[in-house]
Figure (cartoon, rainbow, N blue to C red):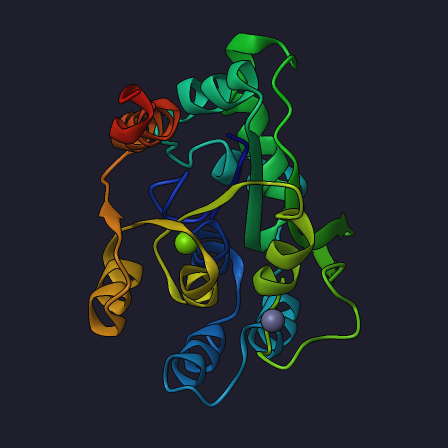
Length: 231
Ligand SMILES: [Mg+2]
Ligand SMILES: [Zn+2]
């Protein structure tokens, strides 16, 4: 049974939203009113980042110090190792930025010396002269949902060939995936959304829970059906 596992990054692999942490520390205060417009549904995720990110200014060292202090779920590495060993596809889909996601993942997976490579689909950020330049590779033409990274379009593209699609997440950008997935692992806002929409979901707190759920899913799929035992 081949799984395609789609995993969110902020507040799922990390304990906080990294973009918000960077904005809180280094952006001019106007980022907060833009955030309010987003929460009120007046702006899409991509528009919000286009308005907020130019408000940031800081040195690269200060930025790295903050990124390196972001807490990661200590069980994530075990989960990534399990997926690699079992040959299951694990993809990280994020409305965050590749610049810090990749740096944080290197730290989280450092015990494996680069042997574990989890593909990341996220917004792009480069750092020049104390300021970020951003772009949206997934997809530059935008989408009908206003996503920063269009998770549904990536999902449709990457799930091809898998028997079952699994979504792991916590927030707004994962909602459209929960509707498409065969199995949903959810916490916080995503769990509430699933309950409202009557989408079955497993709840989790950390990647130890997630590993347990994926293992039992894998096992139940491999078990022969009762009727197979009857001659
Ligand atoms: Mg999240
Ligand atoms: Zn979209």
